Amino acid sequence: MRQSHPGRRALLAGAALLPFAAPGARAALPDRPIRLVLGFPPGSGPDVVGRLLAEALRESWPAGVVVDNKPGAAGAIAAQEVARAAPDGTTLLFGEVGQLAMAPSTYARLPYDPARDFSAVAEVAAIDFAFVLPASLPVADLDSYVTWGKARPQVFMGTFGAGTPGHFGAAMLAAEAGLRAEAVHFRATGDAMTAILGGDVQGMFGTIALVAPHVQAGRLKALAVTGPARAPLLPQVPTMAELGRPSLGFHAWFGLVAPAATPAPVLASLEEGVLRVLAAPPLRARLAETGFRPAGNGRVDFARMMQAETARWAEVVRATGFRAIE
Image (cartoon, rainbow, N blue to C red):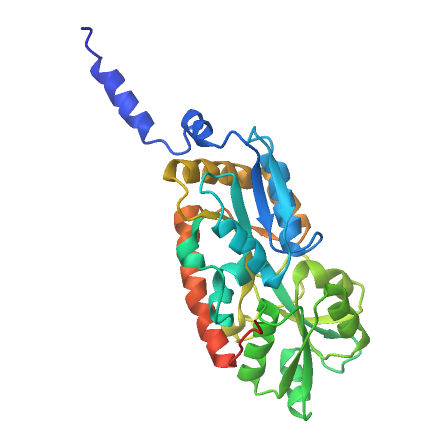
């Protein structure tokens, strides 16, 4: 028998350690279209990011990618469907912070368990919030807003729904600043924006992408952003950390998870495809244009982040005493 050359053996051994080996990765991908299930309606933040990702992945995943909107119950309907799906890589949840980190604390009986029922694939993107108020309000910065609010018997803060990041952001601000605030929850984004623009509520945490055009047009004032750095769409607005309130830093994040029993080779192949398109300029540019921060954490880091975020939001939810209506 012909003996293998030592140099060739070393080369083969090294190749086995290379990440994202294309032939093996492609072989582990499903041979049927991959369905990205979203728990929110078309046009929502998760939908925008999910569709940008799906469009980029169609070249990497030859069998195709389809987006399937299953809105309802704050994303629980979609999450439950994916948790019960066949673990073959053909059905994935494009989830967000509410479904994957907040829901275990906000619902007494959740029809799925994020830690038990899902395997992480990759974090895709994040988006920060800005604290905004009607342009007519006679305040110039966050400190003067707090002073203004304390002089009133009550301040109404709008949210895009109970149990959302904006809701808990408002609760955290009220608690830290000592404001007597009442949350006003809106089911539709348009209704919440109408309320803040009309002065029916006196404050709101809205995503950068949603509120930036109104701030730029002078219809709203933005007093602070919640991200780790100033937002490119609102570069003149300081971060909460800059204002001495680092505990009010938070963001919404989005990522892909698969049913828990999905085989490791399939998860690795899915992860490889997502990280490849997230590293490419076209998708990163599209995400930035719409106000999102590209992420790119792989499955190990994403799983750790979900665990840490679940613990963090559990403390916040406990402090507010909030419990979702089931």
